[in-house]
Length: 89
Image (cartoon, rainbow, N blue to C red; front, side):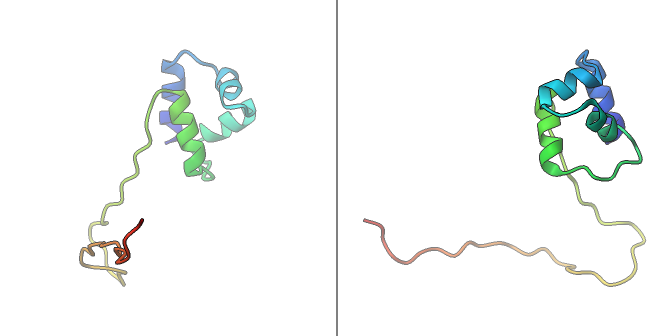
């Protein structure tokens, strides 16, 4: 993820300082986001960075192959929102 952020920033022709100014943060924070060792990415920050770089955030959960051990849910669960029985006036 960090390398993707750096690549998108460079493709946009921005320095870390330029991106920091757009996001109203520090160059040091951009450097942290672009560090492969950094694990403090929040979804809201990633969305702000993506918007500034004309990109989008996609998150994908995949089942790990050869996974053994307890599982929370092995079947798909359908969500059906509760419908109100009262009529609005």
